[in-house]
Length: 150
Image: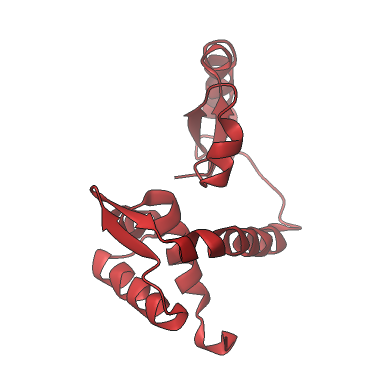
């Protein structure tokens, strides 16, 4: 495959579709319009020669090819994010970003109230997305990309 035909933004659309399982939700995640996101999916389909995501039961489900590509794409984007964020000092009071936190019911009950109170005081622009899980489901959630910021 000729990588020069691939726009990095198409990979961001792929990742958002993988996480959201819908074009409109993926568009919202990326701050794009639904038509632009749909067009990007069309370009990605043409480049990769696969439907990648097909509508089924009210959601866009990844094809076998998409599932095969997903770990590499997610890892590459994660590496790029890490590279560009390296060396940037985190200033809680000025931060405007989100964090995903996996938590059991008990941990949420005990630790979240003081954590949220602390964040409100020290980092008011930080959003916390709590993802509940049960013991034994973490590996599956990570494999499906369900343990990330929305």
